[in-house]
Image 1 (cartoon, rainbow, N blue to C red):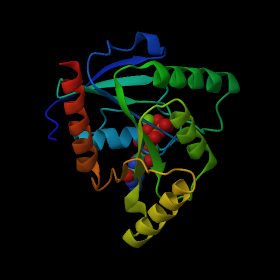
Image 2: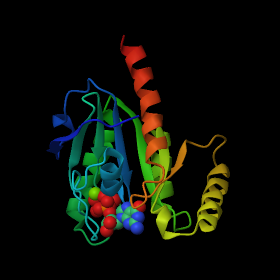
Image 3: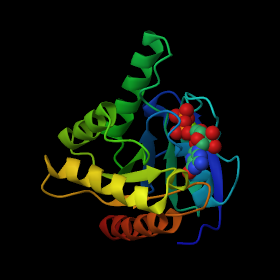
Length: 203
Ligand code: GTP
Ligand code: MG
C-alpha cells in the first residue's frame, strides 16, 4: 500500500470519546520505548507525526491518525514502564483495556516486541489477555537494525518456539526497523488486505 496522506486527528484519555468507528482501525501497543511511535512515523513517511522519545512513557493518550482518508492508525501508551505512579498506571490500564475491548472497528491490534530480548512475562501476559478477550492481534518485532540478521533469525525462532508451546496457530509476525524501513511494507500490505475485508463486510 502506498501512503498518500497521514494526519494526526485527536488524542483521547477516554476511549468513549474516540472518533466514530466508521473506518477500519489498527492499534500499536507494546512496552514503553519499544518503538511504536517511531514505526508509525516510518510507515507513513512523516518524521515527528507521532511523538517519540528516548525516555519511556512518551505516549500517554489514545492517538488517532487518519491514513489515506480511509483508515485509522492508533498510537497507544506503552505498558511495563516501571517509574510511573501506581494511580496513573491503573488509569492507563483501564483506558487501554477499555479501548481494546470495546472498539468495534479495531481489526488488528499489533503488539510490538523488541527483537533483542527473549520472551518477557509482561508481553506474554498481554498477548494472552488479548486472546482471552478474543481481540485479533499480530506481532511486530522492532529494532531489527540493532542485531545482526543471524541474531534476528535466532531470536525470532526462539519466540515462535515459545509461542508454539501454548498455541496451535501462530499470529501474523513481522520484523521491522524504524531506522532502515525494514518490514514497513509488509505491515502496510497486511492492513490493505484487512481493509478490503472491512469494506466487503460493511457493504
Ligand atoms: P512510549 O510512547 O514511551 O511507549 O514509547 P514508543 O514505543 O512509542 O517508542 P518510541 O517510538 O518513542 O521510541 C523509543 C526510542 O527507541 C527512541 O529513542 C527511538 O529513536 C528508538 N527506536 C525506535 N524504533 C527504533 C528502531 O527500529 N531502531 C532503532 N535503532 N531505534 C529505534
Ligand atoms: Mg510512543
